[in-house]
Image (cartoon, rainbow, N blue to C red; front, side, top):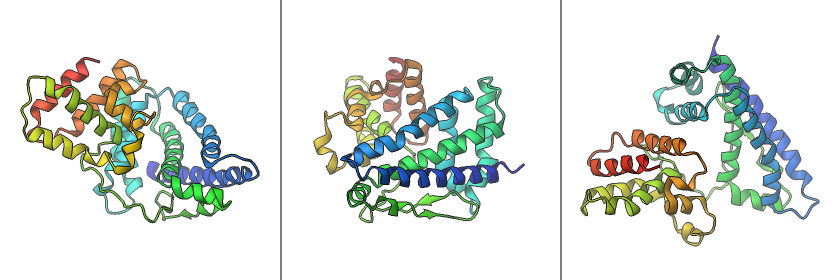
Length: 280
């Protein structure tokens, strides 16, 4: 069985179904007084519920989904062609086997991939909405939002949608694969924990952590402090901004530490990060 081929087929079918349904849903709200924000919430609500159902159906820890998703997103430069197929057949399968054996989860790789492909298709659609929010708002107001649903099809690869925001500059991806929230956690620990730890001096460690995290702060963030903005909450509260239980918060820090393993000359900061984890 070629797991990778089956995954790509399942993802693409779900992605196409989502786009077709979304077009009809958005267009049905033209006759209402709904804003794009309201229409978008109604549009994604059943997809959020579907993700919850998928996650609960196989009783697989979200850590496994996240680990496999990260491999799928971050390790694409490991192959020259048929990238998704190769990752599913190789690296994702290895990670799934290790984690299910470790946690004594009795689920076949085939069953996992059926759920994982649908989950990934939904998250890919969510990413498109998030990245193109301003342009989609304009199109919705002009009653032309259905025009965005031109699927880019690549042979034996995952389908995508064209980025609508032509002015949006593609930011260089962090080579350490840090998320926006993880960068905010780093800044929180740097400013609220590190300086009071007795381990720091004004050194290159400050500069290195600020360099790792600087991209997450842009001018458009200025008005969003203390206004229920996710990035601000992670800056202000660190991992406590998350509603996850304590052991999940510690996992968040463990994941951060793994990503920082190759960063040299921040050993004191890493020790503070470990202290911070152990306090949760």
